[in-house]
Image (cartoon, rainbow, N blue to C red; front, side):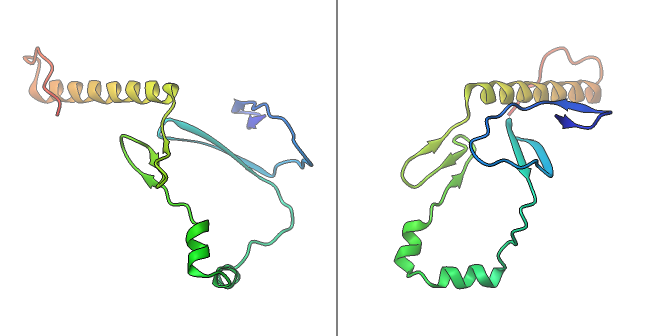
Length: 128
């Protein structure tokens, strides 16, 4: 169950595919119309320090690091694009949600212009 007893948010069903421990925390966030759920549990493992990570990466040759590296460019029309010409696009549901938010922003703009100009404004302003 997500949320608190006072403010319940809902439940997220999932299938356990291995050993499972109770989560210490769950975070639900929405970014650009996409929902993300992340959870964390205490396993006692320590995160590597910066120096340990740098030492581990220093073991590899430059060409090996280039082979292992994946770069992704974030964009506007295409949310993410990999150098292998693989595009990561929004789903239909996300596109509908973003269109609805854009329509709301346009309506807010129209309302603010009408309030600024007074009641004589009868047509919608041209939006750039």
